[in-house]
Structures are given as structure tokens and as C-alpha cells.
Image (cartoon, rainbow, N blue to C red; front, top):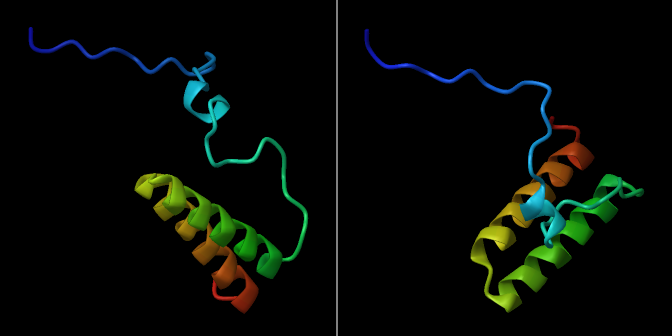
Length: 75
């Protein structure tokens, strides 16, 4: 018979516990230019680094890099 695989539950609600408990994603869209957004993400990265959360700091730096590329028209 072999292995049985469960089907993905499309259309069902997933738990948002990690984001609701202080994740880095903002609850709503942040207005501003790409340069302003880059600065905001770099500030969040610095805050995360100071608090000792290296994973969140790296994620914030990746968002900052995204907005750097957007501002330079490289994406």
C-alpha cells in the first residue's frame, strides 16, 4: 500500500500565533517611500539585535534590502 499523505487544508484558517505575539510584520501597510521603509526596517533590525534576537534582525535586514532594491529600480 505505501505511505498515506494527508491533503493540505486549503481554505481553512491557520494559526497566526507567531505574528500576533510580536512578529516583525506590521498589522497594516506602512506608508512612505522606499527609502523611508528601508530606514524603518533597518531600525527594527537594530532593535532586534539589541534585544538578542538574531533571526528577527536578519529578517528585518532582508526587508530593508528589498526596499533598497526597490528604491534603485533593481527589482
